[in-house]
Length: 356
Length: 276
Image (cartoon, rainbow over all chains, first blue to last red; front, side):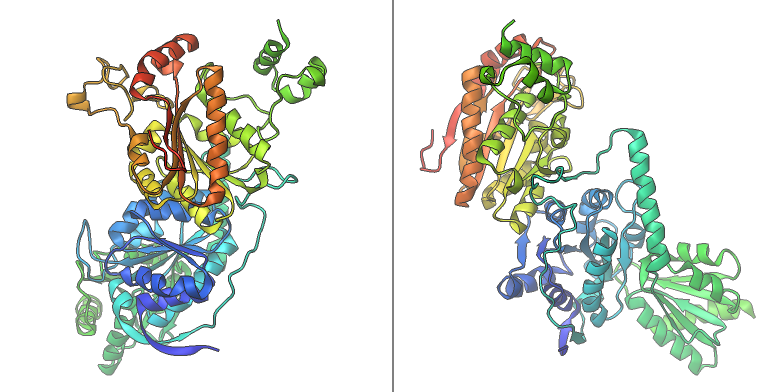
């Protein structure tokens, strides 16, 4: 039985972690996502036995995730931008060692200590690597509190399907705002042993080793080739994208997460003024829906990319469109959320006006 | 050459030690055997290095306690980074300094297993100081084996947090000047002060009787995990002949004369509350 509740995004995410049957959460307080650790500390252990541990730092948190994820259990952490930066070394190790886990980034404004207000300045860090070496996270971008909850379950499914760390990339506004959310029913905590886990070696198998160290270059290249093959497979199977009113559109506004909802309002305002405008919302940022933009470029006159940063996802949109049509950008930074009106204005001045 | 020496000789020359011993030495004459919990490969450690001895002691203890199927180890970054190539137990290789956090993660989700980390002085007492202190302060029910040779071995002999005053290294070529380079850190005494530690001891392996004592301590460190009363912390004061630029024998003499007076051996904290 699903049930509807009015919840903060961070709390919906935490509740979903309990219901998804997560085994452990390791984290460190940082605004604007401390509610995740607080909610779990209050609710999780007594309900499902889930382990909740407040670590001494984000560095310790991610390395606890690394150790615990090696046992094959459902393990997660959450943080916000500066904390996620601290975790990058550990995330690189986890990606190379191919451990399933969930990392949540409730993005705040940067660089540096920045601000505690919502931002999307961590797009590059999330989708292009972040840590050292060639690796990818699967990156999901919720745009509603509902998706903050639903994507936790989806993240664990994808993490175990590909033995790859998954990141939910959201922002301070989605973390803090309250919306109605329909919660999925409680899933049991499960012990599924696939054979690779470090859980104690029985006599009839060689010892399992979780490592990212392969000192011979030949071996290390093979590991890299294997990882890249996996990422190709993820690109083939897991692209998720939402297209709204794109069929008759002359122009597209695109953005991810919270911004996509503001783009949707801007598109409605544009339609009120007689412009045929659609919205494209990438749900997976890695893998990125390149093909969607590539195909739309044959039928639309231009794309306005809107982000709460200086222009990061726009590089992927440009790669997708490959010069076929103009791509313009409207961005706000430092914790400012764009309004539908300013997006409409940007659309009119940068694309529609520019085309006339 | 006596039989024991022949076995040792064989160890250096033959990678199939386990198969060969039975043909060279009659079973009734065996002084010791390679533990089943030690993989049949040659150590990469330099001749005379204490790591090999401590690895073997851990393997012997795991075999004697019959806990191979319940043990998970965590290897560090440092000379012991390949510990999992030798110890035949499930292991995770941690990032530099984070072994005790990784061990915490494992132990928290598998509280009934035996979990240990194996770390050097740079790993545990420099880059990983935060993790070390907080793991011990939370009283995680794990065993931390801490090899202190006063130098960074793997990277080629740089100054470590535990390098003695006046001791030469590649980054303290005139000897450690405590005024500009800081003081050698007695992290073992430090963690013994924390309420989360259950058993804290300092041992060494440069003499046979000390090897036996170290083994007893390691055994205790594993057994005490069953009590779930806190962290067991075993420092082993060790040599590094290659980076100390000494022969193995010289390095052991130097260790005894210089390291032991600063890092005295013995129990610092015991479960019955006795403290030195």
